[in-house]
Amino acid sequence: MPLRAVLSFFLCAFLLSASGCTGIQPSGSGSVSSGDEGNTLQDISGTVKVHFIDVGQGDSILIQSGKECMLVDAGTNETGAEVVRYLKSLGISRLAYLIGTHPHEDHIGGLDDVIHSFDIGTVIMPDVSHTTRTYEDVLDALIDKDLKVTKPVPGTVYQLGEASFTILSPTEEVEQQAAAAGDLNNLSVGLRLTFGSNAFVMCGDAEALSEEAIVESGLILKADVLKLGHHGSSTSTCDSFLQAVSPSIAVVSCGKDNSYGHPHRETMDKLAAEGITVYRTDEQGTLTATSDGSVITWNTGSGASADTGILSDESVSEGKTIADNNSYVLNKNSMKFHLPDCSSVEKMKESNKIYFDGSRDEVIGMGYAPCSQCNP
Ligand SMILES: [Zn+2]
Ligand SMILES: [Zn+2]
Image (cartoon, rainbow, N blue to C red):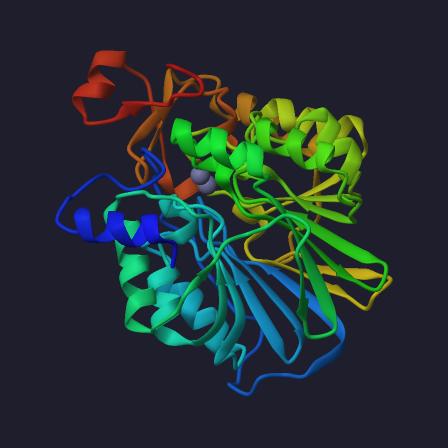
């Protein structure tokens, strides 16, 4: 474990502070379902399977290669138990690698549950002193299990069954800059997983600062699949990085009707312009990609088909006509209210919607908060 982290743990063990990503509201849904019943670990020799687990607004990615498994992030505090259940339903009892990309709650919230529930091999996390209760829970769990933390060093290659992965970030320069600024997103551990001729790139919540440094580092980035940085925020997926990765599929891991408006329209437009297909956990639930080393086969959830940026444009305009006659659309679940044409309205569960014809003050008086995206 990094010394600074241990120190911060002991010094701040009694400090109660807000969770990592300010204002994170895990979507009530975040349901994790497993397509595989039975508790014997399947030997999937000859293939690599990547599961983008639906944890609402957050990340959790399981990678299986042969009989070896690795988990990148574990969702929120609220969804940790669901992640554990999902892994157990696949017969997993050991994780050769466990990566906590950065100490925000939507990534490491469930990590303590995972650490307590499985045999863990190598733990990779950025070397950062951070003092939220959530992070302390993780450090505590690591101490309980006598696990050490390995610092990510770009260019280092690790073997996972028949696949391998290369650490991409944080680069040394960005690490220093981001640590000094308390910029946790840009401390995110990034990696490129390869199996045969297939590759996947995932970099937590790394933003343009880190992405540009990754491009400049000269490491190979080309991949079939890019897990978009920071849930599809416009602060990530900068042009040079997208060009270097040049994926055919982009995955967004985010929650339904999240208060950040993730994924941002700007990012979706950029992908649509490049003809990149987008899969989203908020719309399609848990997504799995199986690679045989040359072809990737997708299981995109409950009958939902691939959603491209172009398709979502169309569905947003449909949303407008449905709700046009109402002043506001309220979300019973998130307690946010929106303008009828806000893109989140289209993504909202019908059962959570209230069409409200009244004044703004009335809505606020009812306990609803304005959406930060459409600013009603
Ligand atoms: Zn995040
Ligand atoms: Zn973050």
